[in-house]
Figure: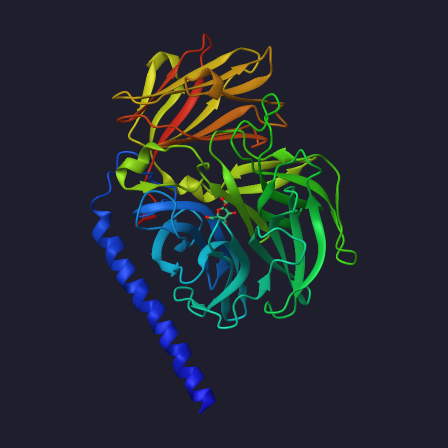
Length: 481
Ligand code: FRU
């Protein structure tokens, strides 16, 4: 009888969650038509309506790539977190799926996903707010066997913040090594220095603490969010998003950072030994809370194409937040290079221009474009990107005397710039979408991802004195909402 009652209770719970999701999906469908599409991206994941932040659960399950995202469907600002869900055959064409997790007692904060045989498992942080700014963060599981409908585990939470730790204990990133599941979790010390903790488990339900993977000595921020630890080209890479680092020259100019430390990691001692200092992975204005996944021998990265505490113009249009395009990463020396995927070539719908840009003055893109620029780096390069009907502009510059690439949105204190020493190729590859630019220099050793809001179409003009060889394409839409 007890077993019978449990089965009924579990089923009732699942039905309740599915009911909530059906009502929510109807709501999303009905609100979609009210969204203003002027800045909506064509080949980057955005929420159909409402708010999106971190990428979650970036993974591969039963023949498809999956990506989840921090989601609040009811407003274009942050609210009690759901998990939105998209899937893709190739990390370029994306299809919206029903919302995967809805908040109940707990808000569904960031986490990861992994295939375990036939099961698709989500591990996420359940955040419970109490009175007077007190809260709990612990780790929860949800299971699916079709990759669409997820059922929260009845034994949740499976891992609570340890004693002598602050309540900030979130963003589990899970992986498997030999017989064990491992997870890294973002946290901080009681005196507010960011740190990341490592655990392992045989069944994902009981976890043993192993080690502190990294901890700020005081000048690396008060909280480390969204950690990730993996092997890449013979080294270990420890990724995290520190909050509260002070700007230093051209570095750490965004409110919060995302970057990595290269080192070694030992599965016997569970010690991560850093070999080089923390480096940002992207030098643009908008790139945070990245997540990586490995499939088919390749390591892919995606990030939230926004930042906290920045007002984004799309908020007025019924949505806020996007994902960067997926990039493949590799290690060259002690630098991670980011490359656009091969499958992005499928989006090239038509060639708009090939040849010297000066002789045509400017090229106009219908919302989206890809531009390959071969410049002579011994001379200055200056390109202007502006809206055909006004709105925001951006200048891209290279000055051989200072050896830096500059992305300037027209506000002096907001300029982003970084030294560029090409490791091989000296060309630029630039991706434009309705309100975004992604500039890959050389092999992707320096990348800038920034949101920019032109009105109308993009217009690209060469302001350099030198001629610039340009190949320009229109890119087709690849998001099915
Ligand atoms: C990172 C983050 C995570 C948290 C989530 C909440 O941007 O603050 O640490 O889980 O967003 O939406």
